[in-house]
Length: 403
Ligand SMILES: Cc1cc2nc3c(=O)[nH]c(=O)nc-3n(C[C@H](O)[C@H](O)[C@H](O)COP(=O)(O)OP(=O)(O)OC[C@H]3O[C@@H](n4cnc5c(N)ncnc54)[C@H](O)[C@@H]3O)c2cc1C
Image 1 (cartoon, helix red, strand yellow):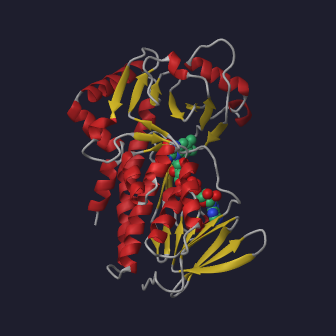
Image 2 (tube, protein in one colour; image 1 turned 90 degrees about the vertical axis):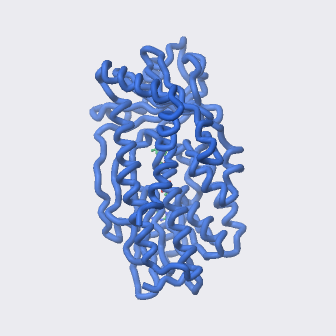
Image 3 (cartoon, protein in one colour; image 1 turned 60 degrees about the horizontal axis):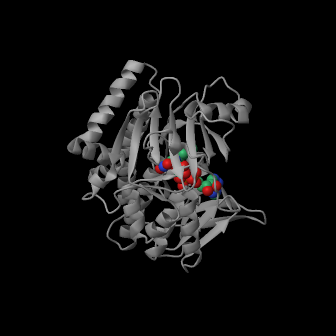
């Protein structure tokens, strides 16, 4: 198949989430024209991803945006696995990754910080066009191009591209119209995220800015984002949405965590479905998928968006090779293999394991897991291996070895 990235058709990207935006900036910076179509009228500011891992910061640095992103967030030099009942904690210091990455820390910053920075840049670039309020509703492949049906308030129109990238999230219309199966499962329980400005750090010994807190009665994740604590709790499948989002229920969860007199102030609250799914393929002809359109996983470990950005950079590099006539379209099958196989082998496996470990109900098994974390954190060699894996450095390296 002849893919001409320097001809009359731009690369069309559906979805201005972190993944679509990253691919858009990568291509536009490398002189490949793009049109980015976003269904929403404004950049979505939903509170989902907030954790940025070192290799993602290294990659975004190549696009000159890491410093700006860092200035909008909080650098997290260490993170912890804690046992809420005993107060024991294993502290993982990312400084040990000094020789492996230019950014040996996690960053805590809401995902919309990235999309804002990138859209501002794209708006100033002559070879990039961002259209808000333009939703893709269908996609057809033709001999030399791909055609998309687009709906906006003013019009319905068609646009042709050399290829289309589905960065349109978990319910991707591109994936569905291309009839690509999204295999896996959905957990029966939802996750509740609530934020508070209450200083939870005063209630725990030496609390880090990122914490996975095990407890046979109720585990949670505590993440700091600027001046708020974001608390993620499991829920019971039989409870109604009204109950789970009520003040009373959230106050109860927060008081279980830290007993204070009076109420916590509650910022936002959201319930999320939790899935583990991977698309059967990330490529059919001129249609490519990445990010949540291609894979979804539970958020424990912060790997969904990070893995999606790794997809975008991997694909961007391969499209650049095609545009320079250094590769033909077969390299896009390599993108599919490298990113899909690593997702199945690593991200899915790791996040499923993270959930199992946190929700362990047997106090003895949980104590054993905590002891293992303590031992790993206090042994430099084990600690480094653990952080290379959980910071996704390994998954990026391993993906490039797949051929
Ligand atoms: C509670 C929670 C916490 C999380 N924390 C982390 C974390 O810390 N770290 C991490 O790596 N991941 C995390 N994730 C996962 C992360 O949020 C997603 O992996 C990430 O948003 C995926 O980015 P994306 O660009 O692929 O898709 P999205 O962010 O979903 O963006 C898709 C975009 O496409 C647009 N769109 C949809 N349909 C169309 C259409 N038909 N036409 C045009 N545009 C369309 C949407 O409006 C949206 O802007 C978390 C998720 C949850 C729920």
